[in-house]
Length: 474
Image (cartoon, rainbow, N blue to C red; front, side):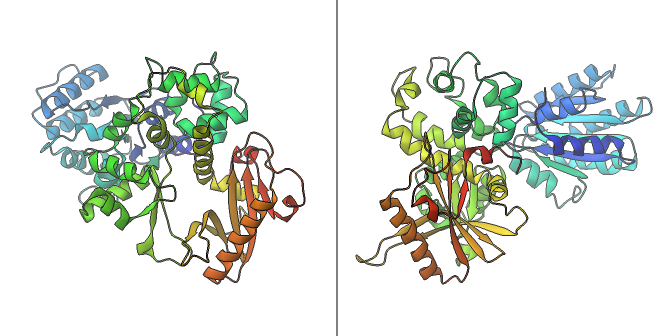
């Protein structure tokens, strides 16, 4: 059963009703549900479908394409020498089919692009020279290698320039969609458990499909990451290898960012990598942002060159914290860690990342969904012994002359603001206003799991967002 993806399905349904041929690119990270989305939406009815083979040479790719033509119903297929032959054969086959829309689904297209294969040129010729001149072809190409799809197809400046009629980036589930999924699978999870699971797995549907309903959420994490048959323990290398043809620099970047809570500038990343490959580094950063692994943000008043990159992918952060370098052979490692400081430190940071992935829900909860705004982080480094540095992880800079200074607190019950923390909040607000010179009103907002304990200090908080708000539609 397909959960969520209403907008994506709507776009795919529209191409069926179109009065012209349509060229659609569907892309997104590994395990995100691209193939399932396409198959379910079209009810598995394809005139032709094919899946590229990972790490196979051109000869094997063409051989598999031949088999796909035969499975589709083409009885005689002459030996395919190259991709031009392959797409000519596809043209001939499609031309024999009855009147009506013909859906062509080519999955994992990037894997078919082997060295010197001229795949893109052949695809250009197929679309420009044949399919686009008709009214009955729906060509859907799909791939996990997001950077390849974007650069070779979506942003192609050759024969495929502006030829895509639709492009769909399949993104991770929100908390709302994960709740729908958990309910559909009868996992018996409450919102706190869904949130904590999201803090580990993110919104990747395949990862959620591995959860066992007879296990608690903590037991499930043990099962997926720390048991002898842990399916996600070795997912890291496969994830980045499937997305990027040369994954080394991408892994180096996220490894560097994984050690910095607030993120790093491009220069700091280059220094951490030991070299600055110019366009290569910039391209890799753009790819990682496009895939949703990192976010790029600026502090208020800073220039574009001061952009900070921050790792926000839940799975990657969990991997760095608990899997990489963990030599303990404890099948119950996670269950035993829940009451230890290592869990508390991780959960606070992971909750912040979840909040950044649900900005629209936070704005809706604050009643500012219709207000134009930008989200920043801000850090002030003390200039002397008489000063104290300040770090603000989330600022919502609103066009209605208000800035929301957001504090995120993950707690097992209502969070109690005590005198010391109240003084810290006042100090942050004061330093921010003084150093930035802003003339906007500064509101303090607390985003927490269950809200605040009512006391004298809580009454000074101008806005509250709770866990349930993060499950909204946004």
